[in-house]
Length: 109
Image 1 (cartoon, rainbow, N blue to C red):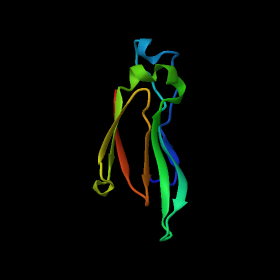
Image 2 (image 1 turned 30 degrees about the vertical axis):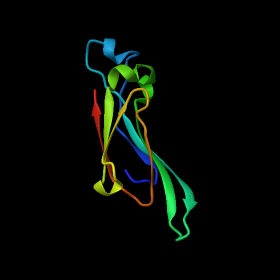
Image 3 (image 1 turned 90 degrees about the vertical axis):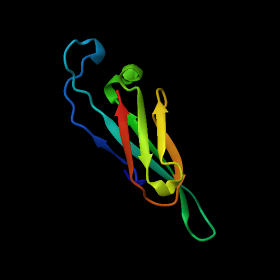
Image 4 (image 1 turned 60 degrees about the vertical axis):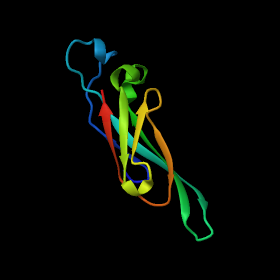
């Protein structure tokens, strides 16, 4: 995901009230997205960006802690720290940057 904002939606079907208690298979909507805002311009004209990468299960937010254990975000090596692990309840990664970068995430159920 780039810092320009956006999300990817996985098509979903009917979701039971509590997918963990349904006994059968359930289809969940998983949203992985990003938000972005420009914070400032440096003396050299470069802009500093704050970006947020997030993972949500819109239809089962109250059960999210029991469904998603943690999310591992991997950033490009030039960012300094390459790997971030976020645990429930805060699965968002917020960081600063100066350019577009690719982020991959692994969701641990």
